[in-house]
Each structure stands twice: as structure tokens, then as C-alpha cells.
Length: 365
Image 1 (cartoon, one colour):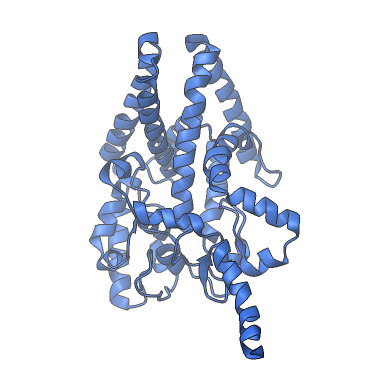
Image 2 (cartoon, rainbow, N blue to C red):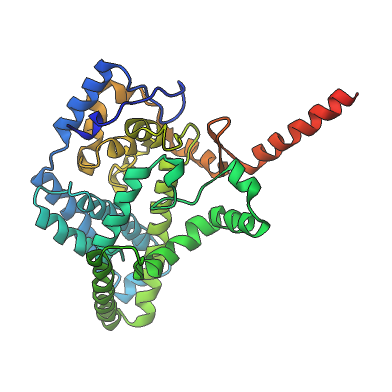
């Protein structure tokens, strides 16, 4: 059975971004048909995508080798383009981790390892972690693996002052989207969790060796200073873009979160993963991952088929998209309110805390 048919869906509030009602049999049949039609990889499409991403990325690095093109007004444009291509390379890496980019398992692994080096990410280790994310996304009782730190209102209110400070700091946009990506890709991913299986731990060690060799080679070619002035902004920009995409894919107004006994795979996919409708150029650089509801419904659908699958089923067409402008409102969302079943901000929490006080004051009059 396809991923679309493994769990029973649950209706969601109408009109919210990312919501859809997969409960009717007709809707289920439409979803299953679309998933089955587009879940098989296409070698020509995969090779074309790999070529139109890897070749211009390498070309930009080659161009930056010439001092004339490292001027203050040309280099930033080239680095920005390279960062966009690095995001696209990460999506290819991501598909390989799901075994969905090409049909051959070995080819997926080879492409995944190579693109993993370029994106500073250990292939097998990341694949193991990301698999946990897909199995637990939207489950309040299984948070903490491959997701962004999120507390419920009750957890936040019961937390110590230090834990609240740490949480606010971690969710601060400057820390989350500017500092954290560089730390994650440059440092955190150089170490393996103790509970990781042996192959996944070795993946981290071998990736570190490969990165060391690659960095030494690039430093010999460009010089240490020039290489770092190119590579560090690349990691920061592409990491920030990637983390922003991941953030708005699961932290948006109308998102789905449930306790484990009520958690549902299909509802978590269609209601808990956004349909992030981006301008065409940004959709291209982000490898169609804005169709995240489709990806979570069936991770085996390659990125180059996500839009086709979305367009093939009427149920998907009923999902309200999250626009680029609308996604900025997600920045204010900080906590999950279990009573109201929605994400709220700190200002919302303060208003909720003031209501009983105002009610007592009103009754005292």
C-alpha cells in the first residue's frame, strides 16, 4: 500500500494554511492514485536536475578563482547564486536519503555521499536522523528528533527561568536563521550521537575526512583567506534559507500537532506540513520542497514530481497555500497551545494570562 493509504486521515479546520480533509473515500482514492503515479523516479529527469545544478555550481566556483571576478560587486552576486544552487543540491541529497532521486539504490548512495560532502552533511547519519523526523512529525510526545525545538504553553509556564531564556534565545530569528545554520553545518554535524548505529557513526567520520581533504584542496587552489571568504557566506546563506524552509514547513498558522494516541500519519502530512507556494525562481532553487505536504504524505516521490503529484489530485488542490508574504507571520509563533490547538506567540500568551485577572477585576466591580 502507498504511504497515502497507511493511516486514516482527520478533518481539519477549513480555511487554514496546510489544511485538507482526506477523510472521504473519493479523496483517498484520488490521493492514492496520484501518489502511485508519481512515486517512481525518472533517470532522465534526475540526471537533468543534477546537471543543471552541479554544473553551474562548479562554474561559479571556477569563476571565483579569477581575482577580477572577486570584486566587491560581482562576488556577492555569484556567492548568492551559489548559495541558491547549494540549497538545490541539498534537496537532491535529501531525495537520495529517501531513496527517491534515482531508481538504483547504489546510485542514490553515491550521489548522496558526493552532495553530502558539498553540503557538509554526512549522508547515512543524516538519513537516519531524518527518518525519525518523518515518523514523528506532528507528534507532541515524540518531539526532539530532527525538528526545531518547540514547547507547549504548559511546558513553557512550568519551565525554569533559565530554560525559558534558553528557549527564547534558540527561537530568536537572528540566532535561528543566522547563527544556528553555520554552527549546525560547520560543527554539530561533525559529531555523531552515541545512540546512532555503527554505520551512521562511521558516515560522520568518513565525511569529516572527505571534508578535510576537500577543504585542503580548495585552500591550496584559492588560498585560505579567499576560500573562507567564499565558503562561510555560502554556508550561512544556504543554511539560513534551508532552515527557514524547514521552519515554515511545520511551524505555521493552522499546523497540526497531536498527542501520540491521537496522532495520525496522513493528517500530520496534509495538515502538519505546509504547501509553501513560492515564486517560480525560488521554487526552482528550493527543489520544489515547498510541496511539503506531498513529500510527507509519500517521501518516495522525487522532488521533480512533487508539483505534478499535487496537481493530479483534487484533494491537494483544496489545500490553502502558504505564501511568501504570509509565511513571515510564522515568525511570531512560538508555543503550541494544546487547549486551543494552535501555535501562539509570546504576546498571545500574555493576553491569555491576563484574562483571569481582568475577569476577577470585572467581577469585583
